Length: 261
Length: 261
Image (cartoon, rainbow over all chains, first blue to last red; front, side, top):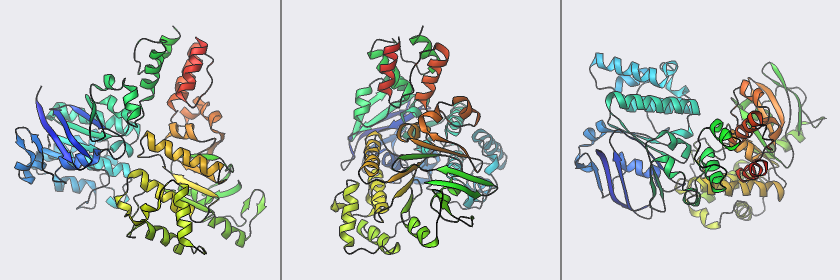
C-alpha cells in the first residue's frame, strides 16, 4: 500500500480536532459527513486555497513546501460553479489550459471529451452552460494536465445518476491509464458505493472509516451523525436484524428472491 | 386552485394545486409552468381560476400572495445583515406594515430562528440556516402559496427532518399551500400528497402522489425515476405476489414484509 497524501492531526477552530486521514495512491476515496462538518473546507485546505498550519504530507513533503505551481500540477480541485473561464467556449478553454505538447494535447483532450460525453457542449457559449455542464467542464479542465490527485466537492448535487455513473467510470479508466487518486466529498452515501474507501467525519473527527459496504452497516452511528443510509443497505440491515435475511443485498432482485425463496 | 386551459406554447394546460396540502412538481424545464402558477406572463385573455374569471385587482392581490424560492440558485445578497435583507424585502414588496421589526421577528420565529441571527451576514450562515432565512423572507408577505424549488438539496437527515416539520407546520397551523419542485423522486414521493409531472411542455399526469408512482410502466416509459421504496415493493408484488402495500417509510415496509412471510 502506497500512501500519496497523509493528513495528520489537523486542527482548525471547532471544525477539526486532530483529524487524521490517509489517502492511498490510485484509490477512489469518499469523505462524507453531515452539513457543516468541514468537508468542503477540507478540500479547500488540500487544494491550498486555505492555508493553515498543519502536517499534511504529499508523497514525502509537506504540501506547503511545494511551489504552488508545482503543487497544482499534482492536485486539482473541482468545487462546483466556482470557475472563471478565460475563453468563450470549453474547447478553447481546454486548449488554453493544457500545457502539453500539441499532439499529446489533442489526444488527451479527445479522450477526456469522449469519456465525459461533453462533445455537444465544446463549442457552446460559456454563458449558456447549465449547472451540470459547468461541473463536467470543470472536471475536464482539472484533468487536462494529468494531475495525480483530483478533489471533487459534492458533484452529485449537480449531476444526474447517468452523468455520475459515466463520470465515475471515466475517472476510473483515467486512473487505470495514467494513475489518478480521486477524493470526493458528498452528503449522499449512495455515492460511496462506487468508491474503494469511505471516511465519515462528524464532530471534528473521523467517526468511521473503511470499505464502504462494511462501514455502511453501522446504521446507528451513521443515522446519529445525521446521514441517510442507501435504501437497499438500510433495508438489508433492518431485515437482517429481524432475521428475515442473513446478508446485505444491494440488488433488489436478489433481495426479493432471498426474502421469498 | 384549479387552472383551466392555460395557454403554454402550443398546448393548453389544465391542472390543480391542492389547497393546504404539500403538492409536488417533477419535470424538465418547469419554469413555464411555475410562471403560470405565479400568475405571471399569462398569454390567456381571461384568467380563470376555480372556474371564476379573475379581474385585474384580484389578480394583483393573488400575485402578492404567492412566493417562489429557488434554493439551488446562488443568491447574490448585497445587504450587510439578515435584518437588512429582510427589511429590504418589506420595502421592495411595498408591504404596508405598522411594525416591520415585529413582522420580521414573527417570520423568524415560525421558521425556528432566533433574533440573534439578524446581525449576522448571509454568507456566514450554514446551508440549513440560509434555507430557513429564505423561508422567513418568503413568509413576510403572508403568502397563501409557497413554491419551493429544490428545498431538500444539500441537506443532511437532521436538517431535512427540520424542514419537513416546518413545512407541515406551515400547512397545518398557518394554512399555507405548498408546492415542492424537485426531480428527486424519493423526496417527492415521501413528502407530497398531490403530484404534477410536467413533460414536453405538457402536463403528463397529475393526481395523488402514491397512486401516480404505482404506474411503474407508464413512468418508466416516460423516463421518470421510480423511488427506490416503490421499485422494491413493485418488484416483490410482481415477481413473488408478495401483496405488499405501497408505503412511504422504510419501517412500514419492513412490518409489511414481516406480516407477509
